[in-house]
Length: 560
Image (cartoon, rainbow, N blue to C red; front, side):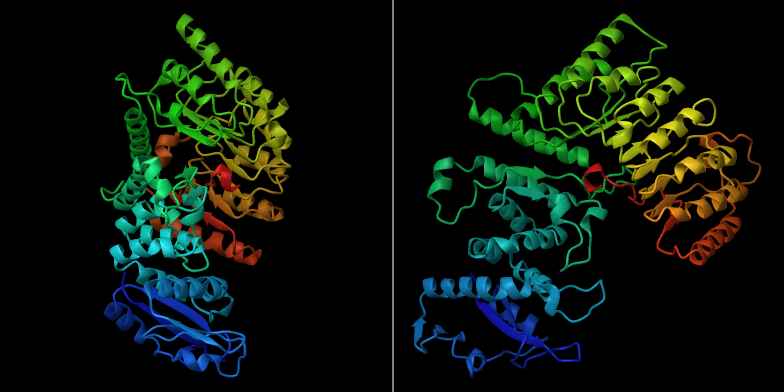
């Protein structure tokens, strides 16, 4: 392990700058790494401090001096010197736990700074990871409170060696990407809003593999090993919209496949008997899984009928996302009916399900059969492009699910004709709880929107409204903007390009035309400016009106 540089500084009173004077609000930064690299990096910011002076006038003070050893000044004034490696490690632990953790991890002592800047503890952590071999050796010496920030910095800077070792020795039961990679007090960068790099994702998976392959006996005898703590690896929440996938990034599907292969390889290594590979979900703890996402699959109803029984064993599953479950009552078949009934029977086994996504599933006239099998009310329901009929919407409005819905996605269902009144009834039933409403490509023109506004504005807690791909004019958008002023919680409206901004548009315009036709950019610039002025005039500058459907504005169920 490299040298330990101990540096002290405090904020200059009234100046917002760091000085080398010793006084109140003292902060200690421990930099691990080669002496020359660490010293060069930090002496540019502040000079070295003689720690002996820090204890002057303090009977219970502490002092630490480099050179030939370490010294502590106790309450009695006696001192002890220990230059052995064990004594140095003890001093390092003391400084980290008694000074760095309570002082540095609290941002209250930091000077005011722009949001793009990093705290001193973040910069120290980044310096720690510059020399990856030394950082890996130092991990057992560091308190567990530093591991979350170490993980974020290693993931951000692609410090793959350290990242792998962090996962291998993770000291907490949960390793959650949504918690670790979000914006924090030390770094304003939210890595969840970026596509994950392949190197970092592979390092996490290799760390998981290393945990599997470390023999139990070896793990038990290693004095610094923290191996047995991690129970749940939550890699959900990463940006994966499928748009312009970069070769240097890893999709969620590739990541899931890699983790599944790791689990299968571990299972096969434990059993000497040859045979077919087990289904990955069978290798997981039945009490830990919260979400299964099979949206991007081509299994169809027959294939899902094979998978669902294995998924249903997870009794605490809260979110199930499927695609292409075709139970269209208008095109029945013997095999299709049998598979659909079996699928419904398995759905009834989920006792904790709160989110169900059935996108691109032909459920015309079958929604009542599907939802009636569930044992508890849903809080999030996604039925995009499901060819829903008026009776489907009427059933949903009367069901126990409506009064509990926080998120509802009806995108791709035509709500302009006979479905409009049942849809309004559904909104009325869900008004007290609805937070997120997605109505992309629902053929809602100005007349349908204006007729729905009295019901829509009763959704007092609504935070997000998606209307992209609907044939609305500037007049309709103004009407929406004016009437939605009563919705104090509304923060995001994803609206379509107004039909006023197209040229030669057929009427009624198909959704494909609205998505593909060219926009008069000059007209749309005037529309944006006018909408912005209306928001400012009504005191709602904080509300985002945008046409960006790929801005990751839609909330995940677990973040609602």
